[in-house]
Image (tube, rainbow, N blue to C red; front, side):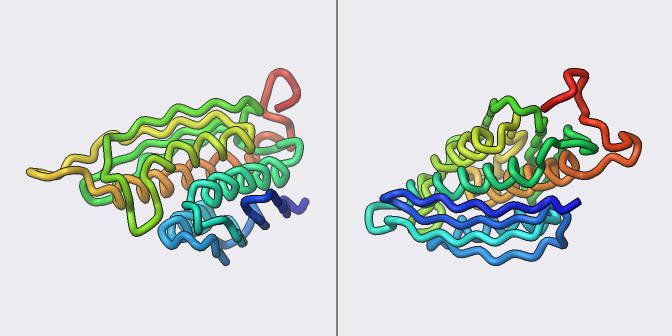
Length: 203
């Protein structure tokens, strides 16, 4: 069974195309116009084991908000579409990922019920010229809403001796942890015999 999706989202502010194969090899073609965001979406593909294409053209002359938000919404919708009725999947996934001084835990339930909990320290306002660190929470909220998943992302440790948290490390570790959690949750459980993993019979 093919677990792929193609989602186009077009508004007056952005034009987004997302294609995903949940059973890929981590190949990615990413272009949003926001360099750091591209780097983070590559983490989703590589560490999730998903083949992922993202092409976004947005109103970057204003700022990066619409571009980042709409891409996250389209990515979530693509996950939801590719999962279909979710028969045979593990449903739950979690990962704890270290990145130098940073430690992040992510847990996901492909529940059909959007709910996001996100906890991170106060960071420098920007990574690179246009990625506002305040957008990271908004990415997970937008993705979780569109993917219809429960997602918890907690930065467990971030302090550097004598200095402020490294924003790049804090955000990248989050993307890696979420990617690994999604990899587990979306994987096929050989013990389920294709059943939907819910006593309700639907997710």
